[in-house]
Image 1 (cartoon, rainbow, N blue to C red):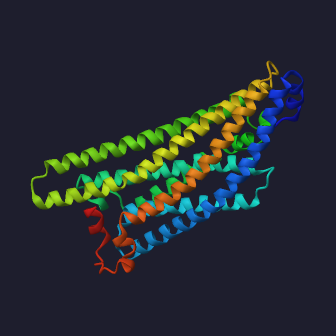
Image 2: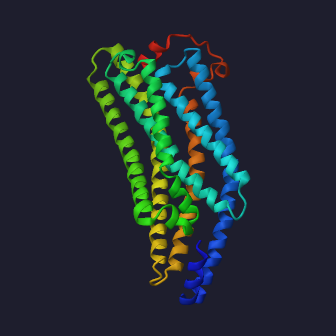
Image 3: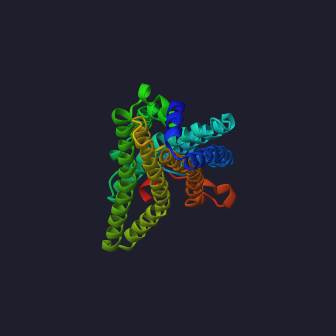
Length: 344
């Protein structure tokens, strides 16, 4: 925080409120350190889960127990989760009491930009594949392996570019006193935060509505089928798609929490911008908003690590016969991934 503003505001602010706010702000730094300590344990678990899920998906695709089209995107998602887990582990061990808040906010920016965008676009792509399959279209005519690789590369590029656009904002969030030199409120902070809120809202609401629409379409197809064999196939497709709803629900909850955290950061930035005018000097209000922002950012980081664990466990639990055939001790008939995919 800017020391000059602190000194000026100290002279014109009620002493008791000011000191109380500063004490709570120091406690917030300790809370951030505790959050990183807890995050290190969760991130180790999330790294193990996501890495195991990635390995099992690759093995299942290699042995042709699972379709490459859908699960190539799933493997890309689990790889992204592993990278984020490594970032949390690294920052947790590097941070100390003075830098804990900086790293918590940096991890929040990372999960709300690259992590959330990559996750949301991956869900959109998988739902689109399932929608195409529900319409009984040839999956290989719709999406060749080359097109699939192009889609995956685009997911990573778009997510990375979106994250890079927020680098200046991440620096200002951690060190507001440099906001004039790096990223001013009206020209940089406010537009970026509003864009972030819009993207998070669009991804969360759009992905949920898209999933519901495709589920309703599958349900209508199932009702309209008259031939018994087709009914069985359609019912299996519907059940498989409904099982994917767990991932969408976890994504919606995580996105909602990150949306709230981003909104509080926008409020903190707005109050800090008013502080620079030295008109009224709402230093107590700013510290209160900053504490809420830091607490919400820390909770969002913890929630995102939990999301990685739940997604990985849910992925394996919904299809254990293909992921863990040796544990279930069942004879798995190896079929071509085209046949498997068109049955799902």
